[in-house]
Image (tube, rainbow, N blue to C red):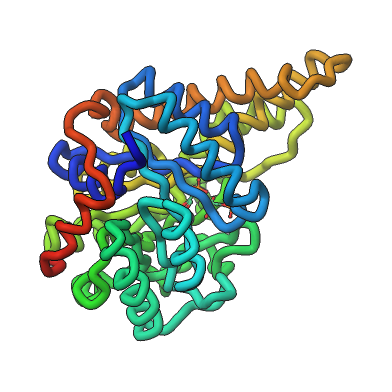
Amino acid sequence: MPLVPMRQILDEAAIGGYGVGAFNINNMEQIQAIMQAAQETKSPVIMQVSRGALKYANRLYLRRLVDAAVELNPDIPIALHLDHGNSFETCKDAIELGFTSVMMDGSLDEDGKTPNSYEKNVDVTRRVVEIAHPAGVTVEGELGCLGGIEDGHGAGIAVDDTEHLTDPDQAGDFVEKTGIDALAVAIGTSHGAYKSLRKDPKSGKMLPPALAMETIHAIHEKMPNCHMVMHGSSSVPKELVDLINQYGGDMPGTYGIPVDQIQDGIKHGVRKVNVDTDMRLAMTGAIRKYMNENPAKFDPRDYLVPARAAAAEMYKARMIAFGQAGHASDYAPKTLDDLKTLYGEPATA
Ligand code: G3H
Ligand code: 13P
Ligand code: ZN
């Protein structure tokens, strides 16, 4: 089957009441690990490519690697999504390259750092929808700004900032004016491995980041058909960080999003769950361990095999926890052409 429009994967997730992990890819091993996990759990797949990934790997290498995944896994619906597109042109380029979904992150200016005005966000997101939907391509928009910073992307907002969270009262207006298919919400999550500054005053132990789950609940109440997206949703498992630190790493003070909070989001309309950092931790831990235990080895395949296996284990755990496991063959996959008909209808909030 060809690449599937992400909108269908999200629509089906809403029908089934589950979430779908959106996993960042930069190389062959990550794609193979995602597909292994998807095969073993029979899960639909969303792979996403950031601007950093496009720069690192070259767009054509990534596109062709994803083609290979599609050809080798005809029984698994796969969507290819642009993560954090920073401009109309970046999104247009991805659509021309055959991505079946794009994120127009109009919450920030083109520099990927300065928060945008609401009007500018609406304008650029709407313009992307205007070229994407006639091509059958899904669009994700973002309202509010995430904390943290990743590879130069992000406003550098403190992870405990509450000023830039999504306003549930504005969300309906944003979805209606832009016509987007999925809404990324800022509820206090941030990119990377350091998502919390909170400590228990008595014990000094770190506490999970304070998430505005009530924002998700309120948006779901107002717009039960709106597919929400949770960025910054790595759980940063302690055992993966411990493994890195055990073998020469130096990552003190990490903290992630507990899986049960993501599951609460999924119960209330979150359909796409973005996870990148957990893969980085899994691969790095496995490579550090292998290098440490096998100092004479120097063939990259030797350490990439355990790194790929560790990533696959992590993906499997997320696919099961988000509920997408077992749903790969629930539906007949649609094409971008099929979606063009859907978008012929007026957008509904
Ligand atoms: O947006 C955040 C993702 O983790 C992608 O990160 O820009 O370093 O590829 P990146
Ligand atoms: P993490 O850094 O929590 O994995 O988030 C990834 C993400 O949101 C990609 O858009
Ligand atoms: Zn993100």
